[in-house]
Image (cartoon, rainbow, N blue to C red; front, side, top):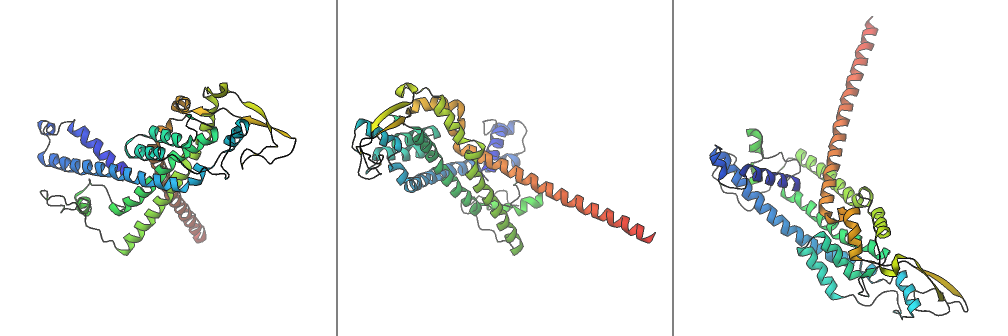
Length: 358
């Protein structure tokens, strides 16, 4: 449905050439011009309202992401525990931080309401950076990217479910033969033969027969399953996000600790927080501290190594479109295989029948 709307918008812009009155000068039929203007008004309103809806769903998904990952956001990492042991800084009595910066949470909501995916990642980066030095470790960097993607997954899933309430899956396109236009006139909410009818804001629901309703539910189930699989595996498998994040961290020129691993001997007989190693009297333990990374250092490598992060929603929708092509190709292949199999059986039967008569 989203791809169809985008295609219609492109067609209208190409036909109009950026000027609403230029089509008549080229000899375009007035009735066609009127249809183009009607579709243009529909798609413009649809695009605007859909954008507002998507932003709203993103905000709701962001709140849900914060709720689902609250323990992860407040958990003190092993790197923080080791650094606290070295600097002899007292940590909370529990493994969780007591508070989170409210301003950082507000910035996350503002980013998803108005800004781009780059700002989404940066807002999560500032929230995860508990000590406010602009630096986080590799584990926190991975969590930051995962958290910035999760609201998009949730919002697109909600929007995908809503599309079934707007238009049936098996609806034919608006163009085509006269009979097809009559069948699809309900999409515009007008009589197919009435060219002067105004388009209502509320489209009446379509009553389907039990056979068509069964086919509709089957197609919805297939599309839903395909979309859920796309969301689950695209960044993880197709975009190879874990591998790319490892490369970003390894290739970034980190100024912290001169981009070197810092090995420190820590007195294990003192407990610098509940998460520190068990105290053993008279024993020492080595702590290897990996350098932290800043957002600017991350961004410099991410633009080249992981550009998918700058178009999260587009990546998922494009991957879903490719999955639909594969699904359609498999369906066509199975249909041809079934036809060839039946023809083969028919040929064998004819040959056997001929041998039997002989």
